[in-house]
Image (tube, rainbow, N blue to C red; front, side, top):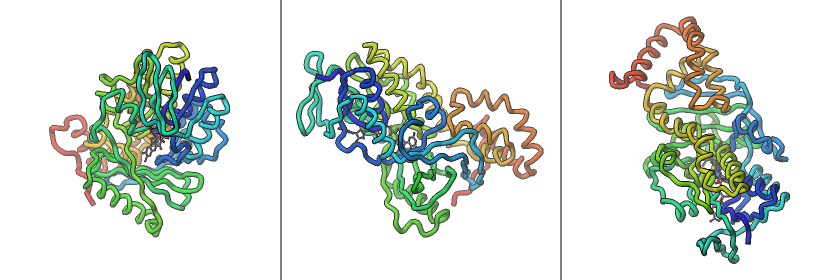
Length: 404
Ligand SMILES: Cc1cc2nc3c(=O)[nH]c(=O)nc-3n(C[C@H](O)[C@H](O)[C@H](O)COP(=O)(O)OP(=O)(O)OC[C@H]3O[C@@H](n4cnc5c(N)ncnc54)[C@H](O)[C@@H]3O)c2cc1C
């Protein structure tokens, strides 16, 4: 009989098993394919690296980047230095290093798929293809399409996910890039890893037509920026949970003897796509609750520590994509170092969705002065039009970007 059984040894499950085992909690973690190269760009913000020093200490290669390029819906490209670095891991390296750490601390790892589980009295019976296990507490850390969640909570429909395509190119770069589109609620990214470049695209609304459109955009981007690279690529797709206000207010992610963490609890930043940080953060909160024998407290603590930030991001998602917000920020970034600084701090996670407006207001005079001094008349007119539509959306569309 184990104290805790964890389904899934991705970043969340492995980190949780490490924390529990280190403190003497008898823990078993199941994963039929861990460690595997999960489809992921592997980018970890400075905020996450600073909060969880264990990531810095892991003995695995990583790429550290200090520059970011942003391409606006109207194809304005701004390259900016980052205030702090972004660290990019290969997921296989990251997951296996965390799992090894957990095993060294005494966690039991079973390379088995959990097929089902059932509550018998106040104990869980867990069935895998190899046998049966018993545990006092059950944790679902089995990712975006979590079957543990399906059984313990309500199933999700496709509208509650993003879909992403990603491939790897054999090229080396020293900066991350983000490209936005005028007619897509999502974005495209290029993240350099130690030995390759991860290029991907993510969007809301998962439909068949949307998938081919996204793939086409990805191909087109690769052909334009890395000519000749489309011949050898293998594109894979995966779901990413969309954290919504409903998740904040209504979903239940724990009870007295079970809990969900990471993607299974839908803890992914809906704007930036950052999920590794939240998988690790939720694991840390849950480990503390298990040790205090107070599992029901877990949900409240998640809300308190990062839930409001995710809620704010999900509330801002439509605003960011449907107005001229990104174009306006790109124009301002071209003309103001203060705005570039703010964007750079958002990319590395130093500013969150709850505080960025305050930071913007503090630097407003400087931003306006930079802009008035540096921008030409046409750009000023474009920004003014965009501002009108940002503040009064009903007055008409912002200066519509070209759809190519
Ligand atoms: C294309 C793409 C790019 C991304 N880029 C980034 C990024 O750059 N930065 C970032 O922070 N986040 C990124 N994310 C999100 C990030 O990958 C996830 O949020 C994160 O991996 C969640 O961790 P997790 O431990 O909850 O789940 P996962 O890492 O998905 O781990 C779940 C594990 O559960 C196992 N499992 C599933 N079912 C069972 C079962 N029945 N029995 C046993 N084991 C099971 C799986 O094998 C898997 O190993 C990206 C996601 C995608 C799809």
